Image (cartoon, rainbow, N blue to C red; front, side, top):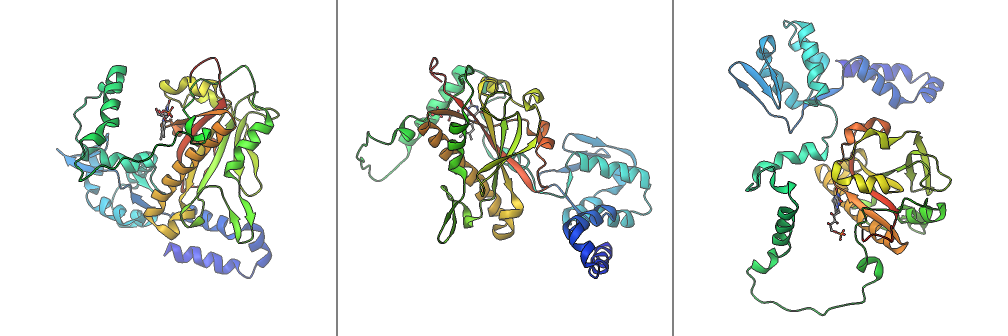
Length: 364
Ligand SMILES: Cc1cc2nc3c(=O)[nH]c(=O)nc-3n(C[C@H](O)[C@H](O)[C@H](O)COP(=O)(O)O)c2cc1C
């Protein structure tokens, strides 16, 4: 019903061509979705609930009292996807104040969602399938990490095969491949000059060719759904002020989004402090699911992650070519800085890389 109302608004707007052009249909669509509560919410696929002794337990949260009566019906509605206005109609006999507060709580904690899950949300559901013989503390000790790593890197020997054929060795791979290694301690005594910085980012630009547009790395369907943001630190790149920039591959330009001191937000875990504190700038890769998922559905999400890996590897090699260091950072607390990026609702953070001048005094 509300969708019809929203459509009605659009129809009404149609004759008002000038106004229509000025205000953009997209804006009005989003606006009417908010005002009339027609946005569909879903129960987040990674969130489970159960009823234990008349308490509803949803992940780490416990609810008791009146809201227990809402289950399981409310769950089935959100599992299919439903707007809040429709929920208020269905549960019209329920105390509206309590219902509103409860729904607000579920939305705030991402139990009810209206956009794609983050990789963390998606993949944490897989943990239970992996046999876990190590306790939580195991990976806190250096010697344990080393022995675990050694075991994994020699795992190929135990594979049962029919025949083994030795391949020819090549000792003259290009140095950008051979010498690449992660850098975690950059040279803080110099700023990166603008020319080096610009040349490095050439690896991500579009190049016009006769058949259209070309990139220097592959992408599923040539859609290039991974966006690039940079955080330039204060006084670390020549002629650039501190802040978050968006890289535009079409114009090969960086565009200031936000004058912010990200360094103060403490979003890095302890193990990565050295890399972050000494780098000249950080690169953030995000995936715009609205670009790739209409064509490839769920696989598009997966292709986007693969593409981000390809981009990080290409960057690491090209950085080595320009004698610049880089280090992939697996985990950051992106929620602490997310609002500074102004991402689209289906644009998710994937990965970041610290980049900087090599410190010739130390190994890495
Ligand atoms: C997806 C990914 C995440 C990584 N996360 C981190 C990280 O959080 N901190 C770090 O110091 N190195 C990180 N690394 C770098 C690896 O530790 C490094 O590549 C590995 O130890 C091999 O060493 P090398 O790159 O010097 O050859 C990451 C690498 C990848 C590909």
